[in-house]
Amino acid sequence: MVLAGLAVPVAGQGGYPGLEDGVWEHVELAPGIAWQYAAFERLNGAPQYINLLVMQADTAARRIRFAASGNTNGIPRVNPDITLDDANYANTRFMRPSEFAARHPALAVVNGGFFSDHPEEVNSGIFKWQGTVWPFTREEPEELRFVGSSAFGLDAGGNWIFKNREDNAWAADWPEAVSALAGAHRLIDGGVIPEPVKSGRWRSAREIRHSGLRHPRTSVCLTNDRYIILLVADGRHRDAIGFTLPELAQLMHHLGCTDAVNLDGGGSSTMYIDGSGVVNHPSDNRVFDREGERPVRTAIVIVRGE
Image 1 (spheres, rainbow, N blue to C red):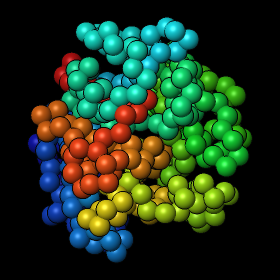
Image 2 (cartoon, rainbow, N blue to C red; image 1 turned 90 degrees about the vertical axis):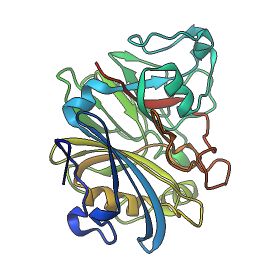
Image 3 (cartoon, rainbow, N blue to C red; image 1 turned 60 degrees about the vertical axis):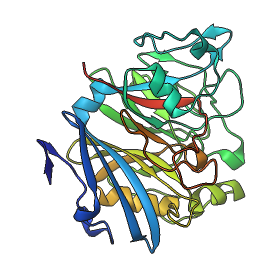
C-alpha cells in the first residue's frame, strides 16, 4: 500500500485476523507522516477502535519531541528548543495532550510514559531530552517493578534505539541515548515477544490487573522497514474493548514491528491531530466520546513542518 509516496506498513500484513486493508482510513499529515484509523467489529473476538501515526524513521527523528510539564526543584523545566508564550505552562504539573498541542507547534500529540504523584519526577523511568536528564522515578516498588522498565529514544546519529532497564532500577542515565522516554513492558525485542509478555506469567496482582486484562493502550515501535508507529487503542467500552499486553504485542508484531515499548495506557491513552482534535475515545470520563482526556506529565509531540 502506498499513500502519496509513503509506504504504509499495515494492510493485514502477517495475517493478523481481522486486520484487513480495506477497513483503514488514511490521511497524509505531512511528507513521511500518515494517520490511520479503523473501527473493527471483531478483532481478537471483540470490537476495537485503533489509531496509528506511521512515520518514516528519519522523518520521526526530526519531528518527534519528548515534552514534560511541571516544575522540578522550583525551576521551570521545558524543552529548550520550544518557544512558549504561556508562562503558566511551566507551573502546570499535569496537562492534557490537547493542552500540550496548544503550547507547541504540534502536528500531532500522543500521551507519553507512566508517572507518579511525586512533584519533582516527570516520568516513571528515564526521561531525557537533548542530553538533559530530567528528574524521574528510578526505582519502583516490587509490585510495580514493570513500570518504567523499558524505553526508546534517539542516539547522537539520529537512530532510534530501545533499551530494557537493568534489574529494578535505572542506575545509569542511558548514555547512548541523547533523548529517551520510558514506558513499561518491552513488547517486542529484536523481533521476538519477550517474557513475561509472551507467556502472561505476571509476578504481582498489580501486574495482572495492568497487563493481563483488556485496557486502552498506547505503544510505540520501530518496524523492520524503518517506520516508527505510535498506536492508540481504545478500551473499557462495549464499542472498543481494548487489549491485554500479549494481544497488543501480537498486534504490533503483525504490523511489522521489530522493537516495541508499551507506554502509559488506560485513561491516559490519547491521540490528538492538528485540525481534527482528539481522534480516539479517551476513557477517563467512561463515555465513548472525545471528551475524556486525562491530564498527564509527559507527551510525544510531532511538530509541524521544518
